[in-house]
Amino acid sequence: MTKKRKRFIAFLAAADVVLLFYYLAERVNSYNATLLAFSYQYGFIPRGFVGTVYQLLDRLLPADLRTYGAVNGFVLITTVGYAVLLFIFLYFILQRIGAAARTAGGAETEEKVYPLAVFFLIFAVPTFAGYYNFGRVDMYLVLLSMLSVALLIREKGIGLLVLLAPLCVMIHEGYVFMYLNILLVLLLYKALSYMEAGEERRARRYLLLLALIVGAASVLFLYFMFFRHKGTQEIYEQIVQTANAMSYRHKCHKDVVRAEILRMDLSEKERGYHIQNFIEFPIFLILMAPFLGIAVKFFRKIFAAAQKGSLARIKYAAVAAGAVTTLPLFLWKVDYGRWCFAVIAYYCLVLLALMAMGDRIVLSAWRETIEETEHKWACAPFLLAYALLLTPLCDVAICKFSYLIYSFPEKIGKMLG
Image: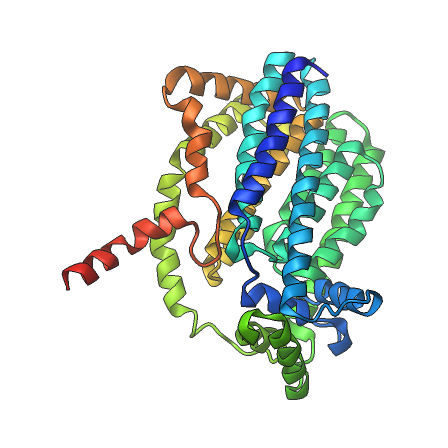
């Protein structure tokens, strides 16, 4: 390991710890606590996996975990574990990129990847340490997505992906739109890469995996959304009673129980949130403009380097368009902070994975993009510091900065009124 990489790894570890404890919430909100009351003792219900594990721990351990204090402790431990595993994942990625960069520009190329790793860390740690997503089951989806990426990079144990994807749907059915794209795009990329190399047998293996994962995830998603039986009032009351015991001031989030167990339609109640979303989202895009500009420039370089009409064009088009799977969430759901993080996580994880796999076009295009940005923008060295203003990402409100701008006219109106 080079001295520069050692120093950067040390910096990354320090940044991980500082971000975690600076943004760490003091308590779990009612929504995130309530999901721990869901379990498969009430049937094969959506979002029941994490609660089932939690209640199994309650039976195995001598302490009573069905209390608000126990929930706080559990979420604290798992969030710290998430931050540690995130660092280990980035360490693994950077080791792989260091080896791959030797054939695509050497140490200089490797160092240009460092800002991307920091950018992901800046969003990935505060988002789940912050109050709104402290204990959110999305955190487990990100962890399992990173495990899936690591398996694909190493090309070992990839058969496990057929189990990991359905497991994620059992944790939260929204995984199909949020994070499954990472796995599907990388599998397609691997298959097309092997086709380019003339290794048809390996290509078919990845296409088969792709088909199996899409099939398994789709069946579970359709079951949870359309074909499962509606829960009884008795089950609803049992879950609410358990959730109340585990929630702050014994007030659980009844709406999520109504929606998932009784299958009640809450769209009318969410109308006001949709209006906020549609106003705040353009504000957030403007705030993200420097990073969006870098992304556009980067993908232009990739398509310029790939031969027209080749399989490379197809696989890079899939990489560029992969985040489109989140579109249904932006159209019909209200937690825009979560959807925005899913988009950021998609591009960061997929690009880091391609670099770790030794994709010379991606490595070269990224190096050139960063070099041009540093040369043309005087503020380039401060962009990562600026990214801190946009974290943590929340749920209905995207982030505090964008919400501050969104709510500013209302606050001025109240002051003048």
